[in-house]
Length: 259
Image (cartoon, rainbow, N blue to C red; front, side, top):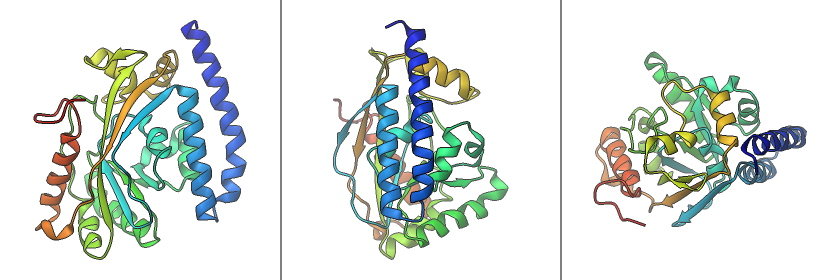
């Protein structure tokens, strides 16, 4: 198929999906189970339209009081992870203003936080409130996105909330997300990776439009065993350990398993 035609058809399909899901999701918001199921169906439909496919290794935890913590490459991670996991994303405040994506994020009860250092306490309070309400959370402690060639350091501020809650019953599961290919090309260099990865000074509209010209992308999602809070003396030690576990699940990481 001609890339431009492919992009136009995908755009039309996404618009139809949004028009179909918006009223349904709004009506289902008061009903947690139904709203969660509707959101997952939406994410799966978006993945189908965009040509996003994923190999899953390991088993995601079931139930409630779970924090899934992993690395972050792109806004496209949201439908991928949302198609597999039940939970609310923790995202940067600017996403509220993004066309379509921001609207859908609001309806899926995303926790929007500021990444400004001076607002760290407010961000921690927002995460605390979401956990207290019994919601599973999906977090990206890098604080930004990368091109997928490495895992950035994890910011320890969010673990200020997670560590004591782990002692009280919260389960934390590290998650590794790795880009394998884009449009049939292996993600071995930045030119290929950047067709999926959204980082640095990239602009959302042009990036998404360029990605929709491609047939899609293939990724691997690895779920690691949950962690025991008693192993860690503090939030910084926990943040570093989770980051190391996430990096170990990626094939480019030193000592990581190839596959």
